[in-house]
Image (cartoon, rainbow over all chains, first blue to last red; front, side, top):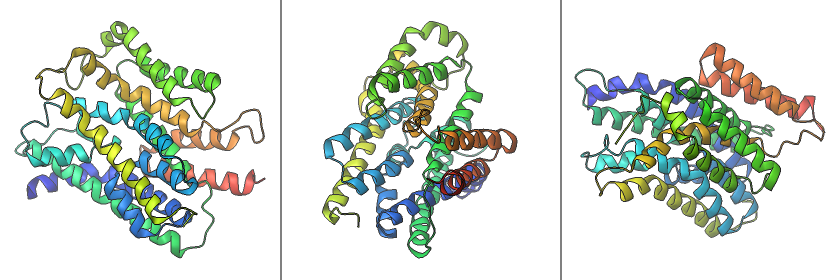
Length: 234
Length: 113
């Protein structure tokens, strides 16, 4: 396990550099909304999702109706449902570690685990476990530190939520580089924009997702022709 | 706190947490038992992330209106800065912090209402 941790750490450095400031961004926004570091810690451990937590600040600040919260979060989380599919076979036979990995799956952990394999002589299961645990530690630390800073410093942090946009842009570029077929990007972009035009910015997510799924299924043959080396076939 | 009680705040956080854990456990609960994952589900699992990622970028920028001042200029400039910084430095931190600081400066000083 110690060896695995040593090998896992360098892999997670880029995640640390992303998670700590992004977590701090969340902590700052929480502090701005009147929630201290304890709240940020609770939210980071219980939710452990950048999108979910950033969205939660909106909900906390406005006291949004529960039904609306449930709907938006379920939609935001659909991608996590699909992340699990990639690891159905790779996570099997891991015992309690499997459930830890399931519970702490995030965009970045997903991306890393998809692209990195355990080095020679290191158990893949321990390797994945260490990567995931380190990522969670970075995130929770960032959230707490941000909230501590936010309550101490008195600076105008309007616009700090652009951090979320920046994160998704970067993740998109990573996906673009990895993808054999770029059709899913165009499908995602067109469906989203058309849906905003048709249904307005408030309600665009459900129709956009439905349209994206439909297009992906319809275009399957043409997309799969280029997508030869899928991560997980079974 | 911002108007809502400790109880409501806790409720909101735990509802989001429960839904998030549910989403993470879902594929294991549904597809682990039958042995093989249906082909179409595996395909969607592989292909959906890029499409959803770009949808989330659009989601972040959904309230920008090109018709009204400042016409989404701060968002567009900052997003371009993020993309360029990431392309040339390959460093997530530089790209994200650089773009965000630029955005904060733009909306707080340059394009301040």
